[in-house]
Image (cartoon, rainbow, N blue to C red; front, top):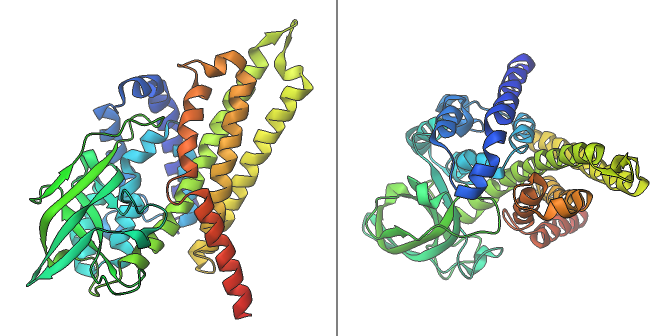
Length: 384
């Protein structure tokens, strides 16, 4: 944990940067599906590519509780901004942090923290999304090398990635939780190719694409960790942290939508009065504010428990489930409060309505979170 004054300085700097520099560019980013290079350079200089990476590897070393507060600020603008460096701090960087050897951490994490390299998390496949047990990508041992064949789908930052954490089945006959390993595969490895950028409903500026692996040969030293078959456990640990991160991002977006809704309600006139005077509009504002406050409190509580290692599974799943569903409700109400204007391109409520929809899908769908929560409840009750 860093000193509160230092954290406050970071939060203030990020808040000002987001609101002064990134917000004015949101419409342009949505239209062009591209982030200005100057913003990327400034994000690197601010340490945003490594805020969740420990200080000994060049990052800011924020705890989960501190990270949540930072991500509240990042979530106030287009989620594509956070996506620029989200995988370095999140599921990709944490794959090395959670499962890698000290040599691997020393070799890779400093370059991820500085933004010199961008990493992607290659788990999802055409027929294996929420259920990684259905993974078909294979890695076969050949002397001191591994040869990987398969395909990955919807891989965030793949078009710009320097490294891809590729999950592959290394023991076909082993149970799913014990037969998967993960490999650090550089983008320029022969046989690895990245497809065209996906055309998505929202989150313009956050790029994703398919990744294809055809006889990709990597040395055994590229396997994350020292034990074969540890990839599934590493993925689950990385996803637990990632769920907290996404939950906090949803809180930031929900707060932005509340602010947009209130500002519009105070200025939009009907019958000679601002619509904020109408009780049914007030009810929607109240519900959205309550959803936002509840999500914020849950995220902070889950993050504190995650740091204390008293709950590293159920809490993150519950936070992600509630916050992602809540921001969907808040976004829907924002469009309703805006009326016809809320359905028009160029209006923040319309853009965030499209952006918010993805949060209930990635890092595990809402339905997967329900299963994680319930199964953990049953497991704890059975253990007595």
